[in-house]
Length: 227
Image (cartoon, rainbow, N blue to C red; front, side):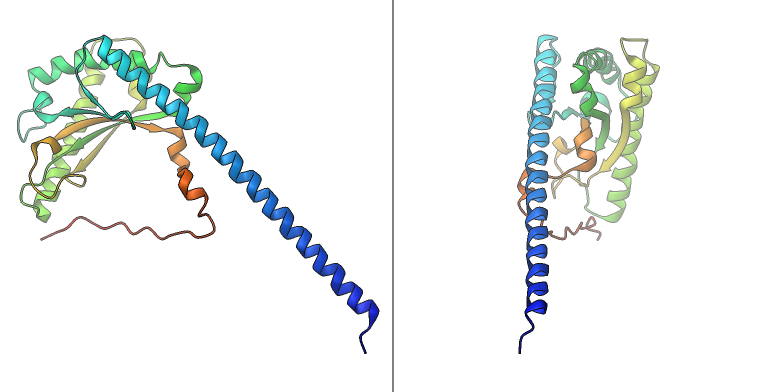
């Protein structure tokens, strides 16, 4: 025979758990909506920053390749360095002396809210695949890092320009070697890239990933091929 008191207690506990589940679902929905709003605002800020850089570079006659989605500025290695060398050429020094003060002025001319989004400026050295071997990988990595360091060092030694100290504090040299290169030797892979790292990337999640938060995927990073 069913005890009415026990049945009532179980029914009450079930109702409590259902209410808690509904509450958690509601809180999750609010959290996701807030994330979407924040990321939309951050995306809008990024676009404004990139457009500002593009506009000012064009107005000042600085011819550089600017990625309209990321703001990355790619400079071919033959503009800055002799082939296989980490010593800046005369042409490279001339280019940096024209480019850097304008680039710095654009960045520090942003609104405080926009500038806050620029966490750092990464100076990336890149190489191409010559032989696609482990020694090729190591040599390219060393050369690309040396080139990135050479660019930052030259900026440090340049005559004072507006916001020079603050600009230097944001610079971070990085060597990428041939990690991002095509599987064959392509001269366009040999370059130096000035790359924005936005504050939002320190805790990065894409909008489309929000809808899959309950189904996380494992990401496997493949090391470079070695022969």
